[in-house]
Image (cartoon, rainbow, N blue to C red; front, side, top):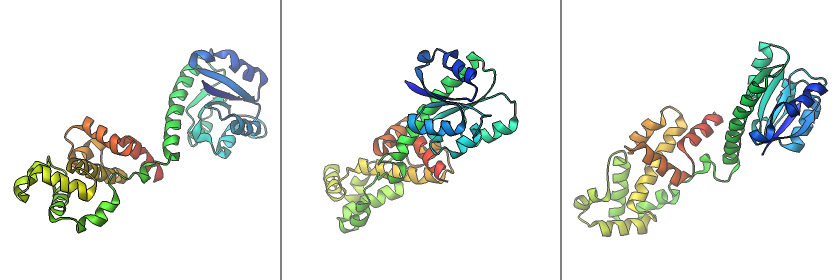
Length: 263
């Protein structure tokens, strides 16, 4: 169930919001109330709500000032309730990732749709927060063991040649079979030597190298992911997504959101 907190200074309106909707139908439950921004901050801290219905004009601390002080506002969805059709309030509210801005008296249908959108938003916020707080975050992803880069020069000539070939042709359609004639060795021998030296098979190393190159491009934020996929050697976009997730545990769009947020 999604936890809803009502922050409204008028008793009648605050109580009415509890019964305006069938909250259970929306998989929600009203877990608390507050009559001003000061109480609101305390309730948010204690209850960790998913959705906050927030009045703008309240004593002690208004809704916008409360949001400005709330350090956890990015973890819940906010629906602003106001009796004033004031663009300045709406503009200030948008600075704090407010999902909806509804005028009083609140229409039940409008509120219901606003809550549905707020649920979608809070689900996305939770997923993103978990990603950012987890041990494995995009900036810590290690697709290709860096030790390989420090050690491969000490390995056999054939391994050095295979890695150099990947570095030069990774954006093309290549396989270990392309090196059989050039190196004068069979695929079984080459795969064995490559695995011994790098801990990866040739194809595994190739895909990891391609994904590493894709990540470097995604970090710059200069190109669309579909174009990056083609440029690093994946003609099939769906396959690129699958390989990317396999090696990073994230989607390319997660990287875009993460590094875009860092800038």
